[in-house]
Image (tube, rainbow, N blue to C red; front, side):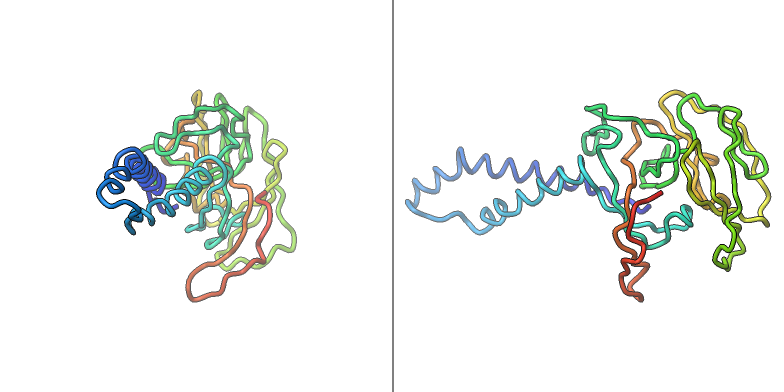
Length: 253
């Protein structure tokens, strides 16, 4: 997911706005009134005072409650399509400080099967994948079938699935009780592996299994790089050449 450091921008704007308002209240306003009794606030100060509450509300909502994202890649197909606009719950996995990402309130930990937004190791761009492995899990991938702690995760071919022009096979996967749909590309060779997830890390994979940059390539995600849990699609708009659509609105499985 494309990265813009909006949290840092919002924090800096909030700090600057608060400093200006506080400085005016305790110092500047008295000086203005002493020089010219009854004088109104200058225009720039009025704009700052009206804009600051909006910035603070956006900062609080985005940092601690819900944040919107747009899906830019096909790595989570068929669950999420390019152009899906999703909502991410920022407090599902605990409250974190903006910019610093430090968790200050524990609420819950990610569960296997969750669709999660995070920052990969050594990369400050937003990614979205599915949680496959929890801390301590033994993950095995053989012939494009997952096993977790020695238990094979059931794959069922989806009968009468829509034609896929990339010739991908569609399966329903039971991931420790969480049912979701994945793509496998039969023409691509299986990339078998066996991996034990370290403490405080999570193993992530895309649902488009043969077209996803995920933990198979750059390793598990540290707990401190978690952003939140994706829970709903609220709009689909692929690009400017098309119209927004609400046909895909609903909960993310």
